[in-house]
Length: 208
Image 1 (cartoon, rainbow, N blue to C red):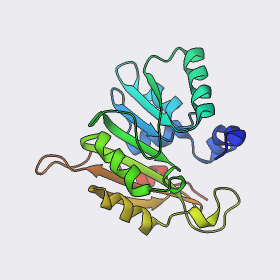
Image 2: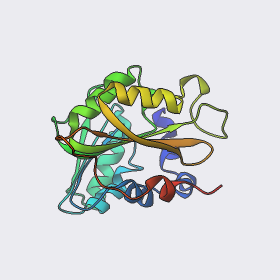
Image 3: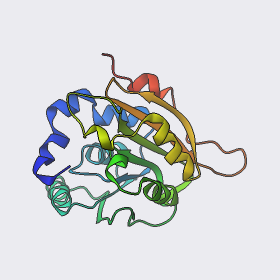
């Protein structure tokens, strides 16, 4: 999204539709975790994530847009957030080390990159064994708001991209008529599953 429309990404309407803190908790983010928010924008998910992971946790964020990052740095300074680490990325590269995150969020980002497979490969690289990734995307149908139809990804396409990065898809579900989640994890040791979670698709599904 162009920086000129930045405010739409953190609007009250968007927060009412998908409350970020409630959604992240339902998806499995917990105190003490290290979360990666790739393509973080002005902070819709990562700002509440800082409160959820607490002082013993870390939130790693990156974006290709300098205006978005300036907004985040201003918020970080204003709120005194010591657990928020901000870096500029260069699509599709993620500027954080291998195996640094327990939990990764791609919030309506995958459709924006020209190389979604490469971006997912970078997400896998940054996840610890057993770490979880959540991909949120738009259904490829006409909606009141959201990106153009030509760039949207179907659930099947998103699952294919995720699996192609050697991540194990746990499940997918619609949040509402407009958007959906795909949950996956990085393979761990033999017999090790992804992070334990409740029935997140039930908790996070929006009642329409």
